Image (cartoon, rainbow, N blue to C red):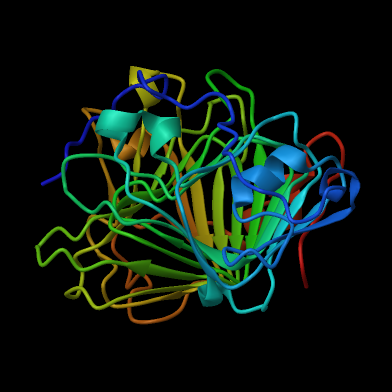
Length: 337
């Protein structure tokens, strides 16, 4: 069984700066271009995504040709407003892959893509961390910047696939994930950001256990109304019926003010979702101290009236839409119809 406590996000070994890889640029003026092409076979401007990120400026579109790209891609906070897109439009054709656990690399260092920049868009590719041992977190994506959009992406991991993190305290980042695919087993969508997962397939991996894991682990600060929203999505698994929890309450670093907020609404829930125990305690903190609820779900995993499956009323749900989760103070609205 994986541990029920977490190491601090400031773990030793976190990668805090971009490592610029030595590559030969095919074009001498790519750094000034608005479009950069990455191709492992040398037919683009750069052979690595990291070199393209280093050359990019606000507004740059980095197009990545089909292939598998090894190692971390670090988008630092000073690279705002860039786009990474797969060249083919088929997310499985472009794979960014890593295999580092948090236990040796730190939380940021384990992330296959570490995106700390605001106003970034990533689309049409796969991000995966293939480390699947039960003893450590191993992120595919660390989303640490505000107003990030992910479209037509596949996020694949095991424990802690996707982290939305704005830092300690009430600071909050916003991310929108649309028409994508996310898979994992333990706490694989987690953090304290305002995160909307819309029209996406969420697959829980089968651990062959009576406890096949937890989908979310929210650490939403008590002062923030919105945390994780899963909407218009499909939750599925080959795991046994009623063995996967919708989530548990993560008090990051033992913070008493991490009062997680999760709403699962207008989605189709498979039979793997627990009836009793759909929301679970963590590290001595009761799930009842957090803000967990559902609204208007369907499927064999939707509630059959179990008392520990809180349902949001229609009148309240009208104030918990994707747009409201993401609006913030600036009215940001990337939501697709």
